[in-house]
Picture 1 (tube, rainbow, N blue to C red):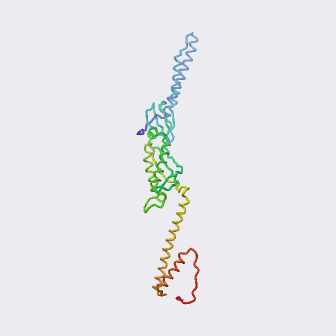
Picture 2: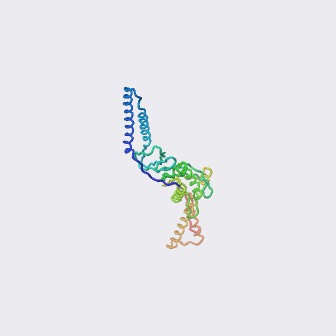
Picture 3: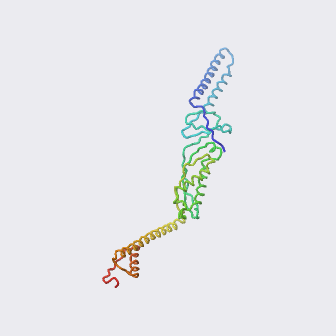
Length: 299
């Protein structure tokens, strides 16, 4: 694995006077050549072409040094490579100059968002689900990003998809066992597990995962209807359980109040009839129609 090495290069404003002096020297030598040519014509001698060659070489040197200037914005880096050898990374923002022969690879060090597509995967119980995540990441080691992987952005995208598929296979969508973490209920635990696994996968690319969260989670269309009916049935069962539990408590409280205050003495058969009537009234979905008894209680 390669390791980033930060280097400092001359500033662009410091090298600008040098470049200007080189061009000024080229102009001066060329002017010298023109003057010497005029003098040579007047005396019948040959012009001094060595001065012209020198002026051209100096101009070429000035043009060559001009290709060494580059700028860096905040949170950017430039990886410098000279004839296949890693020379270092420039991270300081501003206007800089380096050897024009250096190959300069620009890398953004800013935070990036990766919105994955909706993937159809199987959860721990084999149910097909659709899942999508958002990953916040940034480059920390530019040397690893450039030299250890091929196209680090695509590498992060592929590894993210692989991590999502593996994560979905490790958790059930919903209705897990007691204290079991599921994709739907354990959002924080699942996000932390996804971030940890993804970080292990992209460390080779010099990338740091700042955050990873699920943005879309649903059953696949082919089983969504069946799962919806299942959820509705479970909701109805839970509601019925609470209604029955509350009704039994209210009947028990009514019997205890009647017995304690001696309002009415009932035998077992009448108690059973009273309990049945109260449960029908409390648990029934429709309003009960009272029947007024004009005779005695036992008639």
